[in-house]
Every structure is written in C-alpha cells, then in structure tokens.
Image (tube, rainbow, N blue to C red; front, side):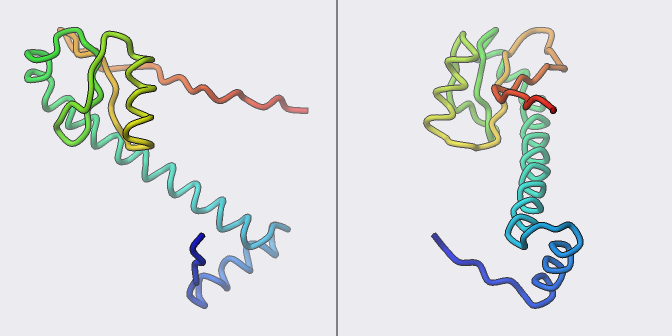
Amino acid sequence: METVTLSTELTTVLQTEAESTGKTMTAVAEEWLRQHYVALRRERLAAQTQRFWANHARLYAEYPNQVVAFYNDEVLDYDSDMRRLALRVRETHGNLPVVIAQVTQPPVRSYKIRSPRLQQEQP
C-alpha cells in the first residue's frame, strides 16, 4: 500500500474538520474522497451516456434489441441478457463507468437503476 503525504494546508483543514466532528483525520479524508469519487464517477457515466445517445443509430444498425456494454464510442460486449452481460463486463473491465443498455427503436431514454446493496435498517 502506498502512503499519501498531504500538504500542510490540507492537513490543517482535515485536522480542523476532524476536531469539530469528533472523527479521526483518516475518517474525514476517506469520507471526502469517497464523496468526490462518487461525484466523479457519476460525471463520467453521464458523459458516456451522452456518447451512447450520439451513437444510437449506428448501435441500432449493428445490435438491434441487444443489450450492449458501451464505453468510449465502442461496444465492449453484448448479450440478450442484461444481468449476464453486466456480470461479465464487471469481471473483465472492473469498475469502469460503462453504459449497459438495450439498443431499441425507438430509444428508451429513462431507466431505473437498481443497486444490489441492501439498505441498513435504522434503529
């Protein structure tokens, strides 16, 4: 594991936040980095989605009614089963912000995203 050295300015900001929230500096840094990563990932996925729509006509011509894994203007993989494709793409490409969508005519522009994470019960 690599050690990260922060500037004095960031160390002071983290220390101040940690003291005011009663958390450790590590906990504060991890929370901030996690929030930044989620926002960055959402931004990258939105960009990939725009690229998917820009390429929709070509995709429909090549993969009508198939589910495709789309990234940087190319189809990484395709299948008729979204779950099977998603598992395969995750295994081969890791956590890449890939658009996985069925290529239909007319295009479906809204989706429900489901997460396998279970919501924790509140006391």
